[in-house]
Image (cartoon, rainbow, N blue to C red; front, side, top):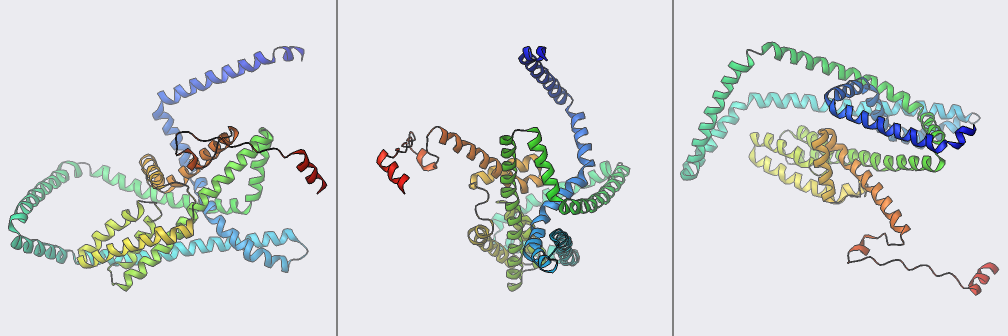
Length: 427
């Protein structure tokens, strides 16, 4: 014991040096063998995919379950089961959880029931009328050639060259690449089918996992807090809990609000397209609703293929649809979006664009959806830390104070005179 007290600092420094060297060696191994490391990480994530799905499903279903439980069933069960509050809570939780699952499944099933038959009908119609679409396009080009021969002749010649080259490249690809690699193609198709089945199984297991998480979410939260307070100081544990709460408020609020906003936009788009007899009204409205979840670029990503699809049927209706989308997006950006979402991001237009481009380039479609709330959380935390440090330096925290050359320091609050102190004491 005496030896420990005398050499405690040396032992601390030794352990710290060992951990630094071990971390450096581990980092070097990860960087030098990144392919093997990424393969191991991919295997672990693949094994944990049902758990990840379950956490995501539970996070999405939690607001709906809380709405059912707190607003409807818990007060009702308290009136019916008066003497046993625990039984009332369990009964309300059970009913709310089942209803949340049924509601979510009903929404998904309803969307699939509406979209899949409509999609099949539209594809069948598109294939059946493809020849007439081509004939209409040829007639339109011929009419342009007759009216504007000087402009259209070079375009038509260039298109003919492109068509010839594309046909030759397609034949070469089929003869030299596709046929010799038919076995590989069949293997890839089989792997795709197996992957689809595996994803369906993972989703089913994820739903089961989400049920367990939602049922005992308070217990899991208490266990997490117990670990934090057990391994960290009370101050640091409180900071971690505050960080998680802030992240949940920004992240969850944005995602839920964006889903509600996109559903409203989809309904408005369908009603407007039905009024103006736009072809494929349900299909294009579903595309607009889904892509509207992506901030900033989402409306354009959904509108462009929809306009091309409608253009094959009726160019005038395609122009009508484009005008409707512009009007709907203006209404969404100026009225519906601010009402539903509020200021949940704290990012300006450039910040939103930067977040989407960076996260989309790094993580694909998931980055396009999750990039903005993630950057909003990071930006909010940095802003809070900055304001705390400015307050410690007795500097203003308002942005307007830094538009000049140098911010003015806050005037220190004057201490009350002794007479004022006596008056306050008497009061």
